[in-house]
Length: 423
Image (cartoon, rainbow, N blue to C red; front, side):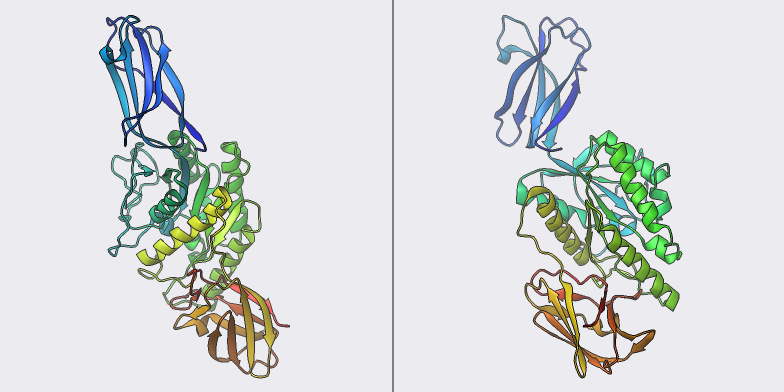
């Protein structure tokens, strides 16, 4: 990853009786032009040999070898082995559970493009296409039982590639239903992901979407401790102390729930927000985005998530500053019959989901006050009701966020769940 990649080759053809030295070159597959001219890498093809080559960012390239006697031209050399469709760029690990795998099964136009590759579970690089989690000939331990489908990460990779020109590789190591204890150092999915990264040649970032398994089992008490154990473990094992993690906050679950369920989802989203206070950990809010079923994001939501994570990565890693930031509540003021909430940045004004009112709660101590309606005007929301004694307002403190999203009209970024004391 970075400005160049190191390719390792070994010569396999049985040309022990052919006199001459071994040469290697790098060719642009699009144009046929030499990227790196022929260089000698071994004096005698009869002996075992190998080499490493710094490949400039880009591709697709073709690595060629040949055996050439000293008194001959390259056009008369004996052909050796080739390595085709070689790219040099940035690689990202996909980790977490089902919404990281991608279970959206409705049709979606999200085609493959040359320049975005995936490290298949067979241990081979391939053109990236859905499903990214393909268990054919798998040699790894994250073999998903349900059939994987559409995920956010092809849209993510295409956005980064088209903006920067840097080829992008993806390593899908997530597993549907996996809880946080499976991702700590020593656990099977953590060790499996680490092995995939090493086999694939390294990464420059982690794409993380997980938490449903822990919240459904009401096991949130040690979530943050386990999450940081994974982060620090991967950073240490890969000798990348600044390895960035691009995380997604939990969306929602539409099955009937109890007050304890609402509390668990609230706590876990809050923990994910706390994690993002640490250096190198980024968070994207997804609560209220459209679902495919009761808990998995739809293909339309996956496209939004992929592009919005790409905007974070473009700003963080590549210095592209035109990306959008999510709206945050900057002020909450109590008036006679309403609360006025102000948000920034708000690029195109705020749009309310049909059930957005259900996601807001106004509190006086431990008493929840009724909200009669919510209105949006520009970058402000107006919450009407008997709010004269209110001391704080919350948004998103519930399990079911279906149709509850509050979205910036221009950026399509959704509000993250929050609690704000009133002025």
